[in-house]
Length: 195
Ligand code: 5GP
Image 1: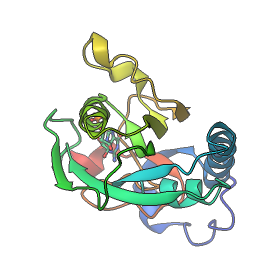
Image 2: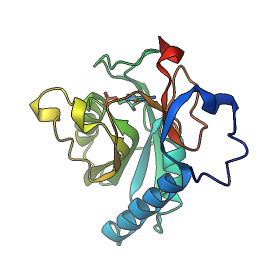
Image 3: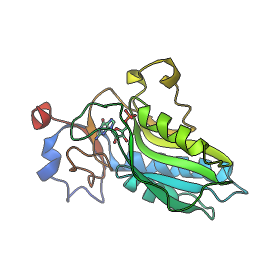
């Protein structure tokens, strides 16, 4: 583990609820900077709208936007696909919509994790109907192994941080019953926490 500056804060406590850490803070930081540099290059003459999907994307969005050297703007949407459990229901509800029109804008959806892909599939379809100039996806984690149905197999996310094992993970925005979002690393919960 190399998650100093946070090392002392996270000794003991909530971290003991993890079976293992899969991505430590330093590893996440380098990957986010790398994605930021790619976005800076790809959108060189544009002012993208970086759209954070609440609540899980907030650390990723904050870190990623600080790694993009462009005159971008930020907006948020909140959707719900999970309820309080650990399995995707396939039902996506918009809980909070965008503040402004995205017509003619280059939108980058910033999401914590692609699991079944249902949330992003639905969101992208919805946003495309609002006449943006383009819609791309930046996801920190991708659980490729669990995609349901052919059309969802490849979500076509332009920016993906890491491939994620088929486990329920928490930290760096990802929660279990609202908790663990503030951990600067990502790990697998001990099964006894949710069983
Ligand atoms: P999808 O629609 O792709 O199945 O689910 C996407 C959403 O489900 C994510 O934005 C996230 O909120 C939640 N999710 C999927 N997998 C995990 C996981 O392993 N851990 C946590 N905490 N949330 C997950």
